[in-house]
Amino acid sequence: MTADTKRSTVVLETEGLKKSFGGVQVIDDLTLQLHEGEALGIVGPNGAGKTTLFNLISGVHRPDEGRVVFKDRDITHLSRQNRCRQGIGRTFQIPKPFADMSVFENVLVCATYARGAGERASYQRCVETLELTRLTGLANKQAGKLTLLNRKRLELARALAGDPSVLLLDEIAGGLTEVEVEELILTIRELHAEGYSIIWIEHIVHALLATVDRIYAISFGRKLIDGDPSEVMCSDEVQACYMGGTPI
Image (tube, rainbow, N blue to C red; front, side, top):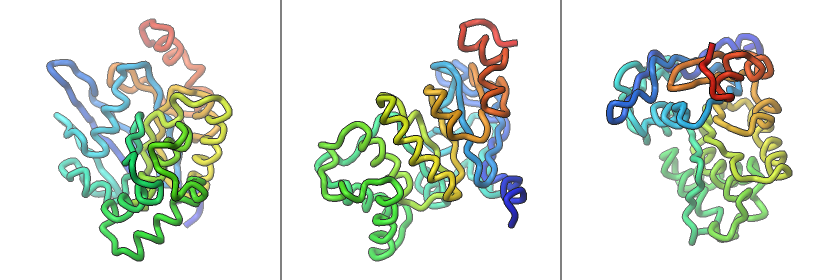
């Protein structure tokens, strides 16, 4: 398969998603596509519906309307566990590891239950994941004693432990220093180069610009614009949205 053919293959798609809570429309007719091997950035102001979109893709919530398609299969009604085993891994904004367990044990739990694999295969995947996230040297350290950067790395490792083909990253760079953000960017770029398809929600725009192939901007649960990262961030629609005006 050539690079162009690979990039043209849609691995994940949402079609006309709608979701409301208490009468408030949070996601409103949202349709997007993620291509195989692509890194897609999602931007939008607070309350735009970004995390709710991830919740719909990963199975935390079910849409009121629309569907989620993964590798040509409608997974709209699959459980979170089944979506994970199909190949969708996800991080959360606030890492919540098993604080009293070691880094290795945290990842091993996820490798075992996310994949449903045997002991040897889970152990091997755990070793591979620690290498991918640069945590091998901290494998025996208690998770509750990690720095914020390494808790973020562990959150990423736990998502990778199930050997997903698609990674959903929810503001994984939030709260880090500039130096730490650069370190995390390097890790995510390496994962992208390895062939992982990535959707990354992030407010730290320069992290996205250094990593993603395309940016998709949303506001009030609806698409504003998508395309080349620099062009999207300089567009009238996005500038108006972030400056508090009415999008064109």
